[in-house]
Image (tube, rainbow, N blue to C red):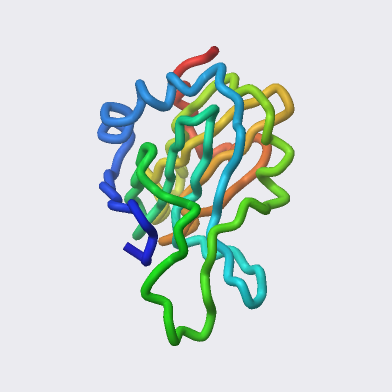
Length: 172
């Protein structure tokens, strides 16, 4: 999918489905260091291609997070080869490529992960995003979460918006 070597998303929707399928593995990341990450950027202008998965490496355990549509989330494990070129883009106006550069994520590299939580959007106005799930990573130096940016990923730093209900998965 998207020309990404090894990417075979299994999209889930809803807190319970995601927690049941991935909660124990996400919780087990606690105590590991974020040793690297990869996102897809366009070579020509450096813009982030937020439709592609965000890949985080925790001491050799790779978690691959990708939001799709309004409420679907795929979490993969150790399947994407970020050293392989993205295929199928020949003749396209812009060429995507894996990048290990992102000013939001770089400060967390080398930091020990303290906790992982699932964040469930619950707006009192019952907006379109209700029920969407973000994945939050907590470090001593701060936190970030990867959320649904309406059919793509978004990376947000700091405390989550108050409409997110936090569901901790475990601590180191």
